[in-house]
Length: 151
Image 1 (tube, rainbow, N blue to C red):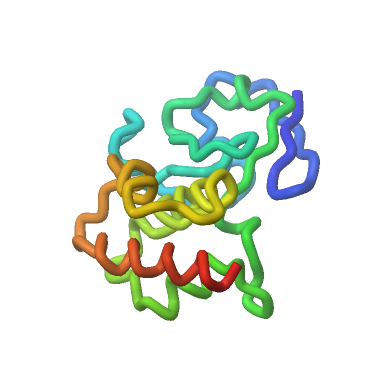
Image 2 (image 1 turned 30 degrees about the horizontal axis):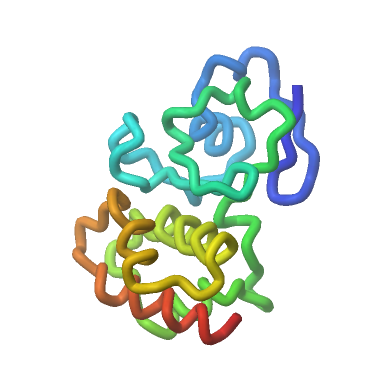
C-alpha cells in the first residue's frame, strides 16, 4: 500500500492501515502540522488536502488513503518560498495560539484551488466548521482575500 504524500510516494505500513490518516501522518511520518482536536471530524484542526479536497484526517482510515494524493502544511512551501496563503496568513497576523492554523490554511488552499476568486459566501461556507478557539475569523477572512490578490 502507498500514497503520494507532499509529492513523494510513501508506503503505508500494513500495521498502520487501520489507524487514522492523522495518526499515520503524525506518528509514522513525523509530520506534526495537522493536529488532533476533537477526533470526530468536527473542529478541523486535522485538515489536510486529499486529492484536492479539504479532508478531516482524524476520520479517514490510513488504509483508505491507498493510492491517493495527500498534502499537508509541510508540503505547501518553504521558509524561502512560502505558499501565497502562508504569506497572507503572516501579513494578516492571523495566528494567536496557532493550534488550528494548519487546518485553517489547508482549508483555504483547497478553497482557492477549487475557486480562485471566491465570494464572501464561498469563504463563509468553506470556513464553516473549522473552529478557532482564539476567534481570529476576521483575520482568516482577510488573509484569504489577500491570498487571492497574491495568486
